[in-house]
Length: 539
Ligand SMILES: [Zn+2]
Image 1 (cartoon, protein in one colour):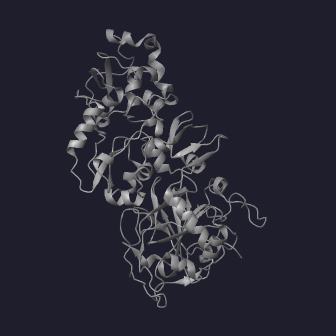
Image 2 (cartoon, rainbow, N blue to C red):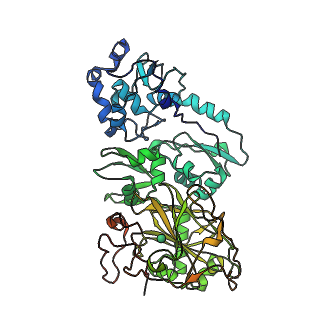
Image 3 (tube, rainbow, N blue to C red):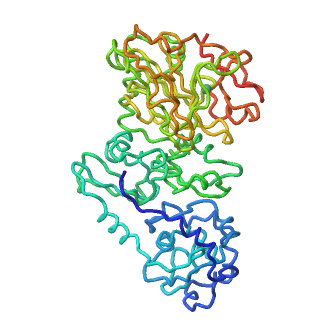
């Protein structure tokens, strides 16, 4: 893991040790505030509606540090000003973001405590006194340049690699594209966890293998690909992921949102949606990479990537040529990686009414990734098979097939090779109250097999405990270990689709809706409240 600047949360706890009364109206005693113009008089209430302005937007051209609370939380911060504070005198060139970061206090909280409006934030005048809420001691404030220099000096030197520092709104996917690397290469070199990836914010160093310091490119804000989206009424970050096909984790990273902030986004909040652009007719599209284009050509040659291909694979029909393209044909990978690094087991093979559920369901947090259980070739990445939502299917050497369904976004395309543990997709949710999960199927020679005994490090529980089972290895296609159960796909006793696997207390409409593929054969959608249905691809 790369050393990186910390984001102290201590200040909030210190608020309990009240030293001085800092609530109420902001200070107006300081003469320097007059230079900020006439806005000050109305400033006391400004914090409450700050959430819909753009002051903290990460793509601010003149402000390299986007700071905390890029979105949301404005009203809460205003209503919840701690009654301790210190007074900080603004020095030449200091920005509110510098100050917020140095004190470990959110930009919004400082704005609320001082009745600052967005436009005042952009030009804090030297000598102005700011109340820093919840803090009991003044600290030196480092500017962005000083912080970057300090950070660089503290990073270990690299051989055959260089540090790239994330620009505002830039994600790991952008960095991969900029340097012609894959996200998997960057993740491996930096030893990033899923939490690291979704938490990557502006200024963080990312090690890029195979380049020199001279080759490090600093993206200009205007060059970054992305759109600014204003949150509508009732809209969630999941809706954005679905609409723009950009991961929740990417949106969180690009906007420096914590998980709580991402959950509590308010109407009117502006968010930067990275990696997408709008064409002249206003259609939003995701930028494709060279890797994706050549993979798509390969998929076309092999007949991969189509809905028919997906249905064939789900029914155990695997073409010889596909297995050959995936790797050697006489030896299986042996074991499967647990597909969500810190994800936890919720239900397994043979669960559900009548034992219809011949798959493993793994839950995790929003923004976490779904990873390839073994190296292979992506055979399908799409949402055209009814009930599965966004699904990736991978063919592995020897003919194993694994599927990963209900993703919020798929990051791979058919025809692409993936390493074991390679990022395929982002964990999706069929209802936020239950949380995102992956429906994992393991298919071999026409049957759905129980993957549990093949998982490494094993079947993981929420507390991190690995279930103790008699784990096995399976390398010979003709010699399946006796303890691995396989069976033909079963139909749910009352339903055709796997569309909503959530428990009965959850409205079915959460799941199907937006990412449900077009109807097949005139089937209508399940009525609301249908119990967990069953996948039934093809006849
Ligand atoms: Zn499932």
